[in-house]
Length: 425
Image 1 (spheres, rainbow, N blue to C red):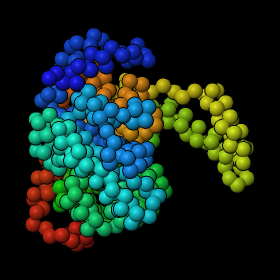
Image 2 (tube, rainbow, N blue to C red; image 1 turned 135 degrees about the horizontal axis):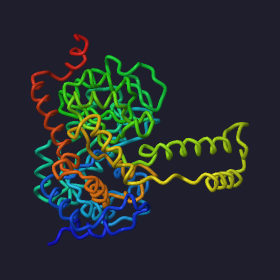
Image 3 (cartoon, helix red, strand yellow; image 1 turned 60 degrees about the horizontal axis):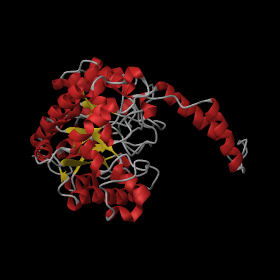
Image 4 (cartoon, one colour; image 1 turned 90 degrees about the horizontal axis):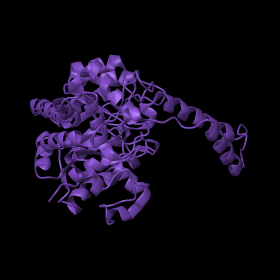
């Protein structure tokens, strides 16, 4: 039977692009090349928030509803579009709000892990749970989507290495050290710093991740936390969904100084599709829009339209009419990919879309079916098949294998040794 991915490729490339400069030339040579690459190397995305999107929008129905075809206006992901996009592996984020009490974060994380595991149980012909690079290759060879679990926030372990070990037993493959909030042992990129990076316990968390063979994910953390983790980690690190700060100056992205450290560490930065992390103009517009919302609604006395939601909505609509949202393009995403390659090297870049976790995406990257459009843009710029294969999956598979090798070398360390190991250093 013909692959739905192969069938859809010409349609993807025939779709109109917002800017002629971003439009790839004739579809056929790119479709053939991409199909060949993705047959040999799985396309592995470092970050997709579909489990949380289902929990938020579908509630309890998510456990039984048909996930084959979902409304593209509500979800960036469904089974048919995953296959159409050529996806061979996915780190499913099990995110919960960093604003919740941490014990509740643990409970909700377990619920999200259950959702990811249920994908393979309900749809074994489409999904296969994975923990290792070998697992991923086996799933790809079998024609299934290798499904890994990424825990997106250090608060989700509630300050307990035992909880971290339990997540690993349930299949978790990475821990993002913080999310939007600074926690007791690590500073976040989007909150006030308290520790100048990692505390000694934070270093112990990194040590334990190495021992368990889990990847250290540095998306969302402050630069000081990035540098501390890079100093402490014995295994390559990842940024599961971050971009180049030189092109979009948000602390959620990665500076050139850190990119050079990632190269020395052997890690990988997986490029995010979120418009506010891709385009500097879009980032500034979003900040200005938030300021306008605050100006109209700030309690208890500052809002121009406090107590008048209709007036506030009208004022915001007028502001948006006068200040239209800047367009973000596939070309700009490709620019981030190429900047990371320029600074860190071709062995240190991947894809981490953030699908179903963001509201605004670049034109032409509307869902999981559209990865081939980005690959075509890079081919238009002269990328070789070998380099595309590194971007799509080769680099993250290498990082996973390296982390597994480090864990094997730490196998003799008993549970609970992480804190003692850090204390001795």
